[in-house]
Length: 373
Image (cartoon, rainbow, N blue to C red):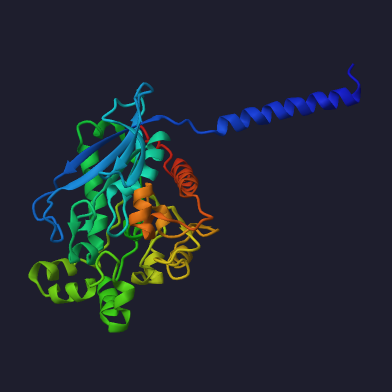
């Protein structure tokens, strides 16, 4: 027989080896990432919010085969934004299973490509991620007052993109329709609340914004005269017709969970409205957010939604930390968007939050077992 001391050491070694194996199993499998573009054409009568572009243009990131040659993706000539690594139009990763889908909504005045840091990681984790350019409110195809003011239409954009993805010849059969989630940044975080079941009081918000002392609070940097412009337009027939639906519910029952990043405009939702949300919601924001301050936005959302998971990132993380990483040229030309507090490593924050999002969706978008008829 082994002496007691030797037996104890042997048992500790076995336990340590078992723990190491467990830790190794927990590390997520990261796949190669493919990327492609799509345009979806909704039925006639869609509200394009004054935009000249009459299609919903999207970027799709997806799991690619192991031999795919990923390349660093940049936006701009010369390059301004780093959009992660991906292989254009790569072959899908071979699988007998379907993939979950996560729809992504950019912030006000942003664009689909600015969600690349999240979309590429979700694809590496086994998701199909699709980001849309919201008409009239994106940097890719231009701005309109309606694109900024008619925020309820953003939720319709996401639902329409989900329709398009499920019908798409290449992606439709690869998506599990029972495993759909959504994630959004800033105004996109607001969009998540509507998709999850909260109903915004846009008419009340507009009335508040039209008070002269509130103009600045309601005017985004991309369109500082938004309130004056939209006020002059609000009696136009098409805008009046759109406003009639501002208070409708835009809950999409296909969406089982939402992830909101630095969500904005909490003022538009009442406590009763937020209480209508009954799906899993995760919220993350930076404590140094000066565009959608956590006290008047993030914490209000979290307090009003039953079971909401809240994470506040410390040490100077701001609102625009959640945009893609900028090149040196971008940092020089647009420091307000691409230069962070010296204590902040934007890439590291992206990795942390993207991992949080993937872990959240792994938990909440588990496969649905259908009963046999």
